[in-house]
Length: 374
Ligand code: CP3
Image 1 (tube, rainbow, N blue to C red):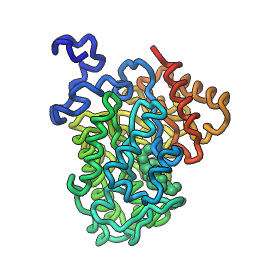
Image 2 (image 1 turned 90 degrees about the vertical axis):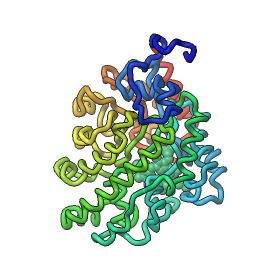
Image 3 (image 1 turned 30 degrees about the vertical axis):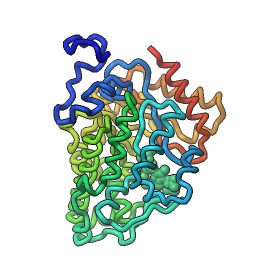
């Protein structure tokens, strides 16, 4: 395709999508490596050669090569080592044949990078030494500069070179989900401290989410400028809120985080768990693609989100243990559900569970590709 004269766009499926001149000339979207990839096309609701597929948490404990590489290296340390980020990110691309890589990191990495005392405890998740409860605590959050995450951005740059035509998805945690870890001090089922702050001290809440939206937006923007071809904002725990509270306490802040990359023109995906009642609200935060968990069938999600957005999802990760025939049937059901949507990216309804057999994931990828090839 590179020998085509610049004026002949016939062989370039995405050439009519003008990429932002704010992206470096060597960025994979601008130099054409990923602009015609199935993931980018589907996110832009354009015809695709086959339905793209990737898995949340595709890099991680389900892969024996990951477990081997991580032996003796704490999670957060691995997130700041360029060599490990690159290798762990590439592992699922090689083994599973997915249509996108998601860079290996964690939602708390930018918080660690600006000096917040936190750790990722195996089997538990992020734990914050001094939970955030007051306006003075909000002052502990400063802007994130590229220098703070230099080894991470070096990995993103190296990955975008190594991946060729496979897009790299950058990501950040959304302000609500980050706040829930900071306010609770760790994972929480009921988000009691978080909601107490939100309803009881809305000035502190909005100041906190404003700061977090800036950090998340800055992190996304740095990843895109370093070579990511798409981004996903993870609001994993926001399904704990009703629509009215989401719109008042969360939406403006998530919109600010997503808005930080709007002028760069990269596809933006926005995902949460248990967010069936919030799909239309999350759409309003500004992403191109709305992620759907496994509780809402895609046709219903499509009605809630409307025709101007693509959907991502939504096979139940627990269904991958049901044996080959059941898995195949459920994959086909998701694909049948997706027919008629303006754009569809196949994914799970949440992350890959650690006990998942990678061969089953490979089979899902192959089945999605075979049964949607056009
Ligand atoms: O492949 C990918 O999706 C990229 C890697 C990735 C990780 N975390 C690696 C990780 C991504 C995108 C995340 C995001 C993340 N982290 C979210 C949002 C996505 C979601 O699942 O809803 C959340 C809520 C977190 C917070 C977090 N970090 C949790 C709940 C855990 C699990 C704790 C445990 O041990 O069960 C982590 C740790 C973590 N992040 C691991 C990985 C691979 C496991 C740590 C390990 O391998 O030792």
